Image (tube, rainbow over all chains, first blue to last red):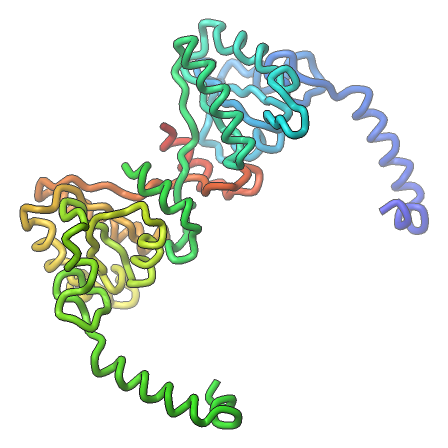
Length: 169
Length: 169
């Protein structure tokens, strides 16, 4: 990319450098949900139309964007900006769990929806957060695990079918 | 495949022809669950270790094999050998629904688990069967829909995330 810009598009490189500098200077973390924003509090957290009784915990702003695109969720978010990963030395402090617990106990939040990824680290993170919040008397739910929409059983992995069987409704 | 056999493996072709003839002559449908078998009643239906209070409805023997491979299900099956598909002229009679309703009402079955595919036709088939069985007072469940094990939200389709949100537990 660098070679392409230097050979074919020096003006574009200049613009990109400026945009990056501006982003670095102005983009920071929302003081309520930790997602990326240019303001003190992000647009979602500021929106009075959002349902403040629901708090959806995701790993990254990209995951938050994925949930937002479904238009099926009208609550608020807490973005961990990472996940528990002991092998990489990432513990509860690095993903702001104390901040999350404080936020969840603000009296407005009725339900915390754990939407971390369904990977080993995401599941471990969900487990740790879930146990801690349940111990504080909060209602905790987890995104459903199961067979994705549109798929045929024959081509779905065994672990997913087994989960879908256990979680049948 | 035909050209390869004729040019390189005429003996293999002979064997395959015999195997196919034998299969055509001896493989039929289980009289209880409709899956492929060489006996009057298939091995799963004959197995007294299986839990006769659960009946899992699948579209094809391949789907049945996928559920079996999980080793998470110990009940019995009913194989539709197809799915409702009005556009292709496939109605309730073609997939033996009357036989299924009779089987589900045998007094032993406590729960019918709908494990048709999560495609449009599979969902429609599950809906029709589910409504009919519920009207007969039976307990009907559906495999969980949701995010597959091991996956990251960012790469999961919107419909699946929306379902996983609605079905959170």
